[in-house]
Length: 113
Length: 114
Image (tube, rainbow over all chains, first blue to last red; front, side, top):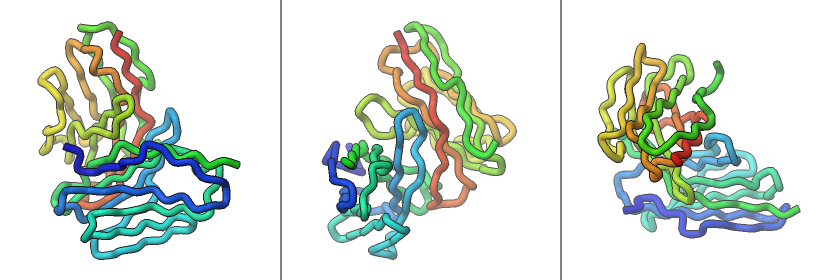
């Protein structure tokens, strides 16, 4: 049973526009959420995270929003750049899980020049 | 090295053979994780080490899979009698060891079982 769901397998946006990547989760124990970015033939690299005590975290062009009541989070990239084209994974963990992450299946983002 | 190192980067083997995959975590990181990514799937948790002990082996898919970690550093994931469904990218990650931390991943080993 998928505890972290990324229901859209792919997203294509124009350079300079906003990219919105969505993620849903089912486990109420999750209290820490992360986004990872992955290029082909490379390991995932950490992008941004958010604790469940917050509803927004911003780092440069990247903002993550958390809606705990809806068990939903989203990653906003503004403005999108061609170098952002990659697979984005949503991940979650909970206190006591020793940072063990549960991942979604990923979303392939393509940013068109 | 500065990052998590995995070897080999690619491994092709025949069905029924045993394989060993190696992970060298970031120096000083006490926590080490193995994940795998099958085609079209997300990252699937396999096993977690804290130091040399493995308090969470819940993700190992069968008793053909085992892992060890020695000296609180290098880890080896062993798959015995490989099957075609074992074909995947095997990823290792490490973290300093506290809760709710980001993991640092290696580039992975692409395993192909023919």
